[in-house]
Image (cartoon, rainbow, N blue to C red; front, side, top):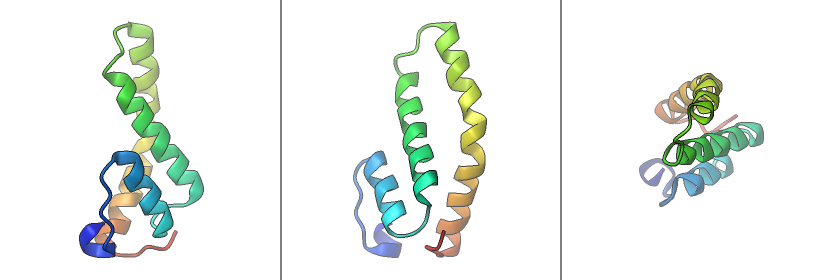
Amino acid sequence: MLEREGIDCRTPKGCIREFFSAGYVSEEDAKLLLEMIDDRNLTSHTYHEEGAEKLFSSLKRYIPLMELLYQRLEGGSGST
């Protein structure tokens, strides 16, 4: 974001908000990315199999969105 947009984001959630502001993701996608970060943070504190399985089942929701974001960042297009 710094090289492409001149935006220096310092936290994962801050970067997602900047992706949205720059037009790389829709509001709906930004919300899902923020959920993904929350799920990632939960992995540091998940010690029970049930919680781990729930987190694991969420991963498939994030893959297409991460691929889309990667393509947009690589292509330089900030349009959603």
